[in-house]
Amino acid sequence: MKIDKVMRMAPVIPVLVVHDVAHGLPVAQALVKGGLPALEVTLRTEAALDVIREMSKCEGSFVGAGTVLNEKQLDAAIDAGAKFIVSPGLTKPLAKAAIERGIPFLPGIATAADIMRGLDLGLDHFKFFPAETSGGIKALKALAAPFYQARFCPTGGITEQSAPDWLALDAVLCVGGSWIVPAGEPDPAAIEARAHAAAKLGK
Image 1: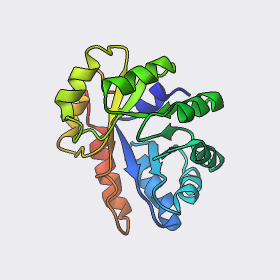
Image 2: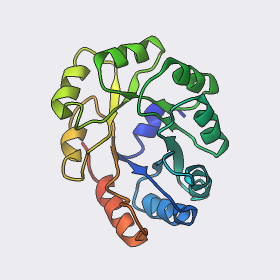
Image 3: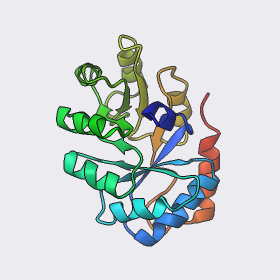
């Protein structure tokens, strides 16, 4: 599967910071029931790789790894079962490694130079990050104009309230959202309800 299809699975990709492996499966089940199958587990916790393994047991889930910074983390995520890779930035070594391994890859960009470097590597789908502090919707509109072939997943500071404005942009296929699964003990019913609402956002 290509990253384009992953980005089109739902209007929101939940960005997940999970500290307890036991939370992995119930959170994934609630999100998938709510209509959000593509799940980004960030490698920000010691439990992250095991969480990817647990979430991958959920039928209908498509689990990826986020906050991947280098080739070592890339391989560890793939070994854990990650089906796509998200990075906060774009480096040539990581991009080349992801391309060589044939895994859908969504690198982070914030500037025109970042996008040009990605295009030189054969990439045209990017994570606009951190979205709000990098200039928000006005900045992405300005970047998307000359790079008409590129498509984006804005992430960082996006809320349930602001997501529709981002999704209204032609160049935006989805957004990354952390509001769907807040920190702490998960409430599966509440997560499923927020997922249902998120799945209805967009064009």
